[in-house]
Length: 284
Image (cartoon, rainbow, N blue to C red):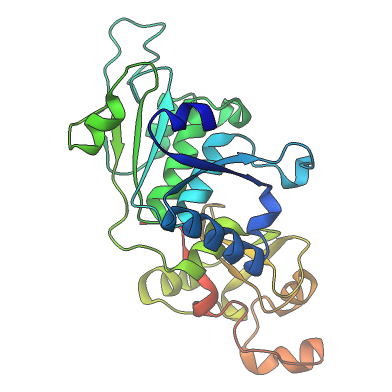
């Protein structure tokens, strides 16, 4: 990298990360500050996974996932992923001559995911499905995403000069605040809480906190302060947040009024199982 970039008068620095650097808020901020400081000094960070110490629990999976997490970490304007094809197609262009390039994707739906092979594909291979997962995360952070060919010289300058290249994925209109971005995409969820329709609508439509009365069931084992998903009756994840109570406690509190918290578990830390300040929507 040093040799290649020096031909263009650029300096580089290598940064090795593991997934657990995103779990801890202090380490997360330190990583962000390191990258931004290098950029302030006109040094280009070359970021890779630290394979020498990574185990399955703290692996990113592939560079697409690493790229999307880093893009969110530094609040990037754009994420560009290079592929062996020109972008997202209606069918695999290597197998079907009639496959058409999709120039713009407004939202990654199950139908869009199916074009890449869907959930049956191996995420760790770095294929198109992996890129869609990475794009989805970045879009939710308010980051524009492009998938273009890595084999065609000059595409990156053309893209940055405003030319339409490959497939562009439109970001959500409102960016997630930095701390909520960390909750949504930095932290690993340790479980999930299924809620009824009323609680789902209160969270999605009215920006409310999650109260015990709206909880149907709990999955996984988690402690107070861990990140958990909120799911609807169909199991769809629509939000993620930091829980004020453990999985065992939430299981006892489900369906109860806030006035019943203390007599049920012996104390009351908060009226909310997840406060709206610690809750981020994963839709829209």
